[in-house]
Length: 187
Image (cartoon, rainbow, N blue to C red):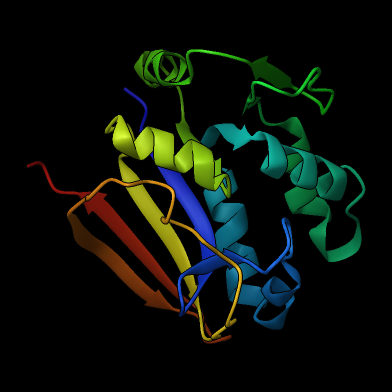
């Protein structure tokens, strides 16, 4: 059985984007060699990526044109299977993308039952909330950034679900980011 892992960068005040949708410029403040290495390491363990509409559109726009230092990450992002959960998107044209317009929880549960590498949710606060309330997330990975953004979108505000967690790992990066890995504790 594959695990469903949620990965996101967050600020100390719990925000995953700034005051506008897809406002992520602050990610560049702390990007460094160790985070780049972790990103590649993590992508190499991914069997598929899961996105909500907004994150899918932002990721597709960025990774289909990324070059230079980002070329190796872009190659993995572009080649991995992607599942896009949206009731409003009409097409999912990014390489290896499948549009899912209904039954998200059932689809993810089916994907988890398949053989293969783990599934990852990147960004996608609404999708994360839905998967949290269904108890489908097996691991939360957060890149905690040493930044108080002050305003923006909180990552977990939409879930409405209490989830007790146990710490699996805390790893500091040279940039000041701390990787935090948690697993849900069975109630």
